[in-house]
Image (cartoon, rainbow, N blue to C red):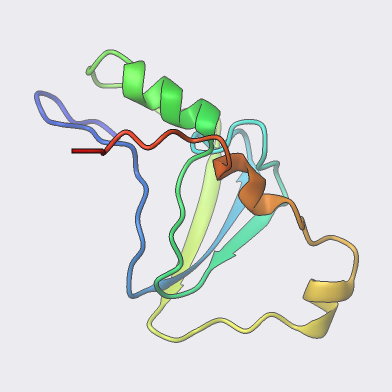
Length: 112
C-alpha cells in the first residue's frame, strides 16, 4: 500500500479474474464498516467493484504519503474461471442482499 510520489486513485475495477476474498481479523480498508471478520465477498469476472463511499472519500482526500496496514489479515483467491456459489450460500440466511447498496450514493467524479 505504499506508493510515494505517485497518483493513487481509488481502487474501483473490473477484471478478467474472478475474486473470492475474506477477512480473517481486523478491518478491511475498502469497507471499514461493511466487511467484518469472518465475512467474504465474491466478484466474478467483469463484475465492477471497489470500496464503499466512506472508504472512497477517505482515500481520495488522504495525504499522499506511505501508510501501513496493521492488525488485519485478509485473503483473496483469484481464478480465470467463474465461481458458482452453492444453493446453501445463496439461501442459507447469511447472504447480504444489500451488499451493493454501499455504492448507491457515490458521485460520478469523471464527467468531462
